[in-house]
Every structure is written in structure tokens, then in C-alpha cells.
Amino acid sequence: MPAHESIPLKEKVRQLPDKPGVYLMKDRLGRIIYVGKAKSLKKRVSSYFTPSRAMTVHPKIRALIASIADLETIEVKSEPEALLLEGRLIKQWKPKYNTDFTDDKRFLLVRVDLAEPLPKFRLTRLRKDTHSRYFGPFAHSGLLRKTLAQMRRQFGILLADATPQRLPDGRWQLYDDVRQELYGFDNIIAADVYRARVEQACEFLDGKSREWMETVRAEMMDAAAKQNFEKAAELRDILLALEKTLAKTRRFERNHPVIRTDDEAADELAAALGLAAPPRTLECFDISHISGTFVVASMVHFADGRPDKNNYRRFQIKSFVGNDDFRAMEEVVGRRYRRLHEEGKTFPDLVVIDGGRGQIGAALKAFALIGVEPPALIGLAKKHETIIFPDERAPLNLPLTSPALNLLQRLRDEAHRFANTYNADLRSKKIRESVLDDFEGLGPVRRKALLDHFGGIDRLRAATPLQIMEVPGIGEKFAADLHAFLHGADQPPPSDEATD
Image (cartoon, rainbow, N blue to C red):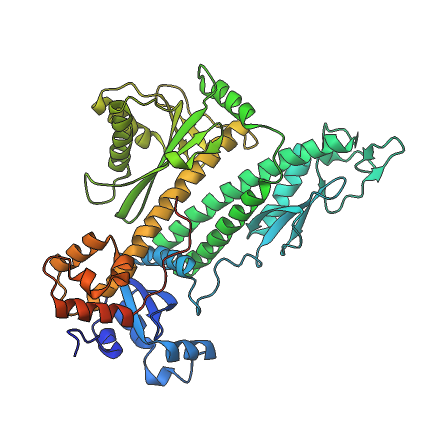
């Protein structure tokens, strides 16, 4: 008999705590088939196995219950934390029985058909082709229609109701009368002049999408704090759909470069920030955590307006345990530039901190502690995309159509993505390693020795019994039993999200 016998499923359910958390249902092959959240893990998970419930639930739920062979739980401190973790794990593992939170067909998109002589801005719910640009999704149709009406006045673009006429000289008459919405824009123009308007409007709408995403994120956190979890879950679905669609839009735009270049963005940024020269190298820092756990930081590096992934860095916080963004920022900025200073390497032309005055103060303190003069440094506060200076200058808000602001937003968004990816990687690693908790006789000392020796659960699972015996304190029988256990409880593969 092996040294380990897995705890029966019913016994696991009986031992669950009356605490908030996330539960992961697994099939007989160890694959995660459903992820759920609970105010009380004990009450919620137990409800799946109540005999009287089996005949009253939806057939899909009955099929799920019939497929459950094992489960795993993650305790958290609060329901809001469970809500956020549930959404992240669903997005990462894509379980069979969860609703697809990344389906954006329920929400309105804005479509711009670039194949038209005069591209119009239309509303749609489906992606129909590959030659159009799409923006969104947007959940509130009324707000979106007001935004498009504003854009028609601001940029002089055409909406779906327009019927432009081509004139004998090749130019176009946008409307049969000079409508009020056009304000000071010419009604008779050449197609290339109109396309310049379209590009500016697209930049504006892309900024609106990011702004909308941050608004939804804030509304979700507010709803969770007020314990309105149904609304918070709905907003979370919208947020995940937004993130998916924005990622698609950015990938597509690489084939449709905007008129303004990165050189122009750098020139404008230098003028706006009062720099002596356009910044060619930029670095941005972001902190990521969930209620103070798995606190990590990212640093991304742009050169001439482009991501330079060879110079990306990621950090685990070492100086403290808990939730303190300011101390975390101070630590990682100090670690980054102390090392550059000691190695005699050049500092970037501009350092961007994701945050406001508190994060800026923490970064300045880091430079003071290592005794070096900081390079040009600013903060970018998310709520209104406000630039914060480290000196007495007043905060600055650039127009949403500004190439300089767009450059800062791309830099900040990439730092945010990189930090969140690292955070998700650590959580994924913890979930995969948790299988060792079920192996009887494996205490914390030998568990740590095994993971340190092999560098993680994936390499441990790939090891032979002889290789496992190379770890101090592991005997022949224990190694054979552990090898058999790991290969009898295969886990799902790690997330397929790219890691830089």
C-alpha cells in the first residue's frame, strides 16, 4: 500500500471551514471543471452534495455534480477578495462548466470600416470582418450614443445615418446641409483629409475604452465593498470582456498605424513635462496584489516608443509582509536603481510611477536612500489620467487625443499587464503545488526541500523515483510512493498566458 491514501471527497467537504473563499471542482483526471466563490465554503460546497437538491437543479448543474471527483479550496479574508479571485481563476483555467466571462457579444461595439472611402462610426454587437477597427465593448448604450454624438461635433466624423455625396471634382460633401454638429469643420473635403479626422477620432475612442474600463473597475470594487455581489459580478464580467476586446484592438492596430509617430509623441511629451530633450527610454513601475497577499511589482522598459522586453523586470516584495503600496514602491525603485548605479549603467530618460503623490514620494525616498539624483520622474494617476510632478508644479491633464498621453498610457498599461501576469503566475504555482498537501507524511521541511531542489511541482512530477531520492531526507519507499501519487493525480497544465 502506498504511504498515502487520498481523503474521500465527502470527508473533505465535512472538513471545510465556515469562511469565505474560492472552490475548484475537479474531474477524475484532476482537471478543473468549475470555479466558484462562497461566503462560507462549508455551506456552499456542501449544498452541491445534498440529495434533495439533485432533482431540482438545472441539468447543467446535475452534469457538473456527476463529474466532480475531487475539490480544492482557497481561503481568503473577505467576500470581495473571493469575487476577484474567482474571476481571475475562471479567466486563467477556463473551466468547462463556468459561463464564458470573455464573451463580449452582449455588449455594444463601435465599428469603423476602413474599406469605405469615407469610414463611418457604427454600432454593432458582432465582429463581422477583419478590415474594420472595433472599439468597446460598452455596456451602457445611452452613454455610448452620447459619446458618438460628441465625437461628431468634436472631430467632424460620419455616423451611420450619414449619406455623403461624391462631387464631380472628386471631393465629398458630407451632408446635404451644413449641420450644427459639424460646427467649424468643412462640409466639402477630400477623402484623405477626412481620414485624418477618422484617425484622431479613433485615438480618442481608444482612450475612452481605457477610461471606461477603469470606471467599471472602480464601480465593481465599490459594489463589492457594499456587499452588492450580484452587481459586482456583472461588472466583473464586463471588465473581463473589455480587457479581451482592448487586447484584440491593440493587436489589430499594429497593421493600421496612426498618422502621428512615436517621435512626435516623444517631442510632445518633452514639451509638456519641460524636459531638455525628447525621452527615448522610459521605465514604468506598478504594484499588484490581492488584499496584501502575493505582493509583486513590475518594471517595463520602452525604447523609442516600443516595448523592450529584454529589459523588463519583476520583483517579489522582500522587506515586509502585508498591504502597503508605498513601501512596496520604495523597495522596488530602490532595488532597480541601486543596481544600475552600482553597475555604472545609464538611467532611463523618464521614470513613470503608476499612482499619485504618495507613490511619487515613495520613489523619491528610494533615490534619497541610495544617494543618487533621480532622472526625470512623474506619476500617472489612473482615475483621470493625471500627470503628477515631484515638485511644486500643478497636476497636468493632457487631452485624450494627445500622442504624449497615449504613449504614457501604453507604457502604464503594459506595466499593469506584466505585474498582473506575474501575480497570476504565483497563484497558479501555488494551486499546482497544493496537490502536495494531500500526500500523507510530507511535512513542511521535506516539502520545501523537494520544491527547492526541483524548482517547482512540474519538474518534481517529471522526476523519476531515483531523482526524487537525491533530495536529502527522502528514502526509496517514500520516493516511489510520491512518484506514484503524483502520476495518479495529474493536474491541469499551467496557464497559457505568455510570460515575458
